[in-house]
Length: 343
Image 1 (cartoon, one colour):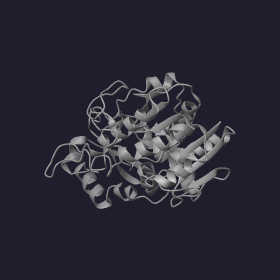
Image 2 (cartoon, rainbow, N blue to C red):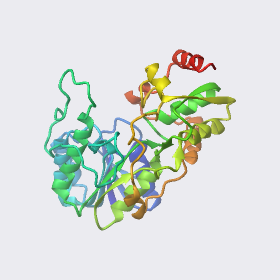
Image 3 (spheres, helix red, strand yellow):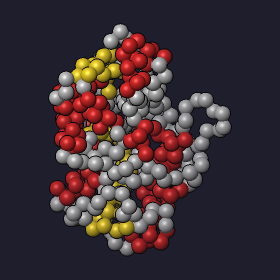
Image 4 (cartoon, one colour):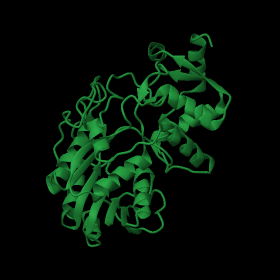
């Protein structure tokens, strides 16, 4: 197999490249060469996806049996459309990594692959979908953009030649967002730790290496499709996750569970101040049975926790990203919540 990975130097893109090399595939990567180091054994082409000349030059390095696109998170639909058009004649399967944010109902409703997707034309610019000034409802801009990028790839490659992957939260070694690294760092500090909600609350993070393996399986497939990519509904819990963080770090800490209502009262930002905590009914109710039937396998979350801690302890550093600073609760605020719990 000859594949092209758009991105390929950090987190999911890097995991895709490493997995492809383990399968003895020939791998070309395309990125600007500014973030992360290229994986040894790849043919690196540097360029900007926003530059038509760079896209044309990239196409001259083809053909490829498949393209795996892991680097379009900040691109407008029309930019993804231009890239797919430039690669149409040199790509077999096109595997596009999108997000569950593209669904109309996320995070408020349970989701399947047949759930309706947000509006978003394939040729939209980056302004499309922005909320009006003063809007106090959910911000759908990112989801509309991602829905538009999906339509862009489908418009060029068609249903049979396109795989759309919609993961939720991706964790694992190399994570740049900072969710799991923050929890591990907090666990290692020990003491009384505010744990959000209830220990029985189910969650669905997926390991980056499992997402990468599924992307490669789909690259090798002869047909397209749309797949949610999450851990099974109900298998993992917040209690199990945080206990794994404590056990992995070996710290003498204890979990103090804080009800949702108390956290809301203390204005704890959902999703970021206590990462993975969110009260919306559908956030961890994503049906990925289609992906399981197609070969997705998700390792236990405790294994992801242990491997991420091992990566951190070995000096592993993620690519710098502004989202890292968004995560984690201030110790003073945590202490106030513990005091309110009588702890």
